[in-house]
Length: 357
Image (cartoon, rainbow, N blue to C red):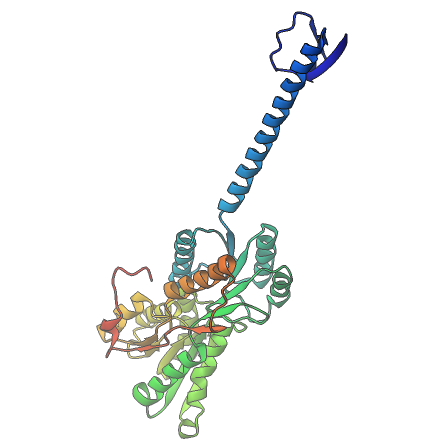
């Protein structure tokens, strides 16, 4: 006579059984009983293996169906242009079957570096970066590259090894405004106030220097004076404040205000209106619908340059997701969207009252 053990919870119709530490010990009284238990245990093991295999398949299926996580290190959310980018990123990521985490650097390069570090720790499969400064994020972009995380630069170019840049030609945007100023608005020359975003970001550098390159052409030398340059971080209220400072400093000497985006230009326009200086001309960039509306009125606001934040962001998400899901690289590293000057002559073609931006 012998004892055989099998797991607790299985049913056994044996009169003499007793529980031992999580197992039933069964007293076997014959070879037939032993054979019965052998086949019983074999069936139990087969079922156990089947259950394990099913569980493994379920886990594998769930893993295969998990949404990829992407990160967006955003420079700021202090104006409609940036808010449109946030909305476009969320909607496009959802349409591509991805989850997205968006972090706001609030124009602080130290915070943006920390934001990118945080996104890498979260295990993102790819990054979109609207960099505070061109060079400030270089070390953490290098780290992402070493981890095999693709990076798409958006709106502002950055220094480092990235998959693609998506945005307008910032220098050309400045050139377009410079050409319009020198050929149409102030052909005989004049005094100009500059209101820029941030000194270290590629957008301000390109838009500012592009415009100045036209003023400095041989045929324009000596005709134009830059009265002052003010930093307003692409924010409408700051644009208004800086314009008030310029008015206090230069008063009626000002002929034109050139702003690196429409939000600052709209703020400058409000300050000029409050000072009853409505003849001072204003130029912006980005193609904000409020700027279009002002241009259509035929007043002080004269021009802007299209910089479609919705389109730029959609393209950035698609490029990133194509690489993550199919390892498809973009045909070009610099994906330049339309850089178009908008004035009273063509504004109706682009103005849409119900547009997001």
